[in-house]
Structure formats: C-alpha cells, structure tokens
Image (cartoon, rainbow, N blue to C red; front, side):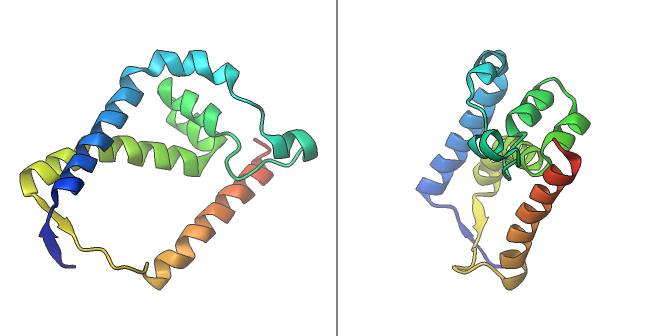
Length: 133
C-alpha cells in the first residue's frame, strides 16, 4: 500500500468527522427524544417484511444505553457501522494530525471488497428476516 501526504481538504474532512462523532455522543439525550418521532418503516408497515435497515433506530438506542449485544441483535450491520463511525471519528484526526499521511486508495474497489459489501448487506437482511426483529 502506498501512502501520500494528506491534503488540506482531507484534514478538514477528518476534523468534520471528529466533530460529527463527538456531537453524536454529546447529544445522546436528544436521540431519545427524537426516536419516537421517526416514521415506521414503509416496507415493514405494508408487507410485514423488514427492510435491510430495519432495527437501526433500536440498535442506535441500545448502543446509547451501552447494550452492545442488544444493538447487534436489532441490526448487526448498523451497529458495526455506528461503532466504526465513532471510533473513526476519534482516531482519524489524531492519525491525520500526527502522521499527516493517508493511504492511496485505488479508484476501483478490489474484487473481494466488491463482493463482500453486497454479501454483508444480504447477510444482515437475512438475519433480520430470520430473527424477526
């Protein structure tokens, strides 16, 4: 993997990511107020079948309560994405600020990643269908 110096825009984006992650944590009480206002899933309402993102709100609320296993039960992929978002928001500014280098990413995703992403989405959806969440 090749590394290159981070651009000004990438460093700004890192700080924006950190601010968004920090705001998500600092404003956790507001999430409890907003959650009941979220609309029901239209697919689940009409058909009874959960969509691939069903349970994301409940997973987020479980994470805010510190219940990682419950969050994983409600929607594993959304839970992993939320944890990655928060960890990345904490680590990226330090990385770009101290190391000041970023990996040079390929224009096209490698074949394994092009397969892994849709497989992860389908596996998550199957989990939601089987678990009946």
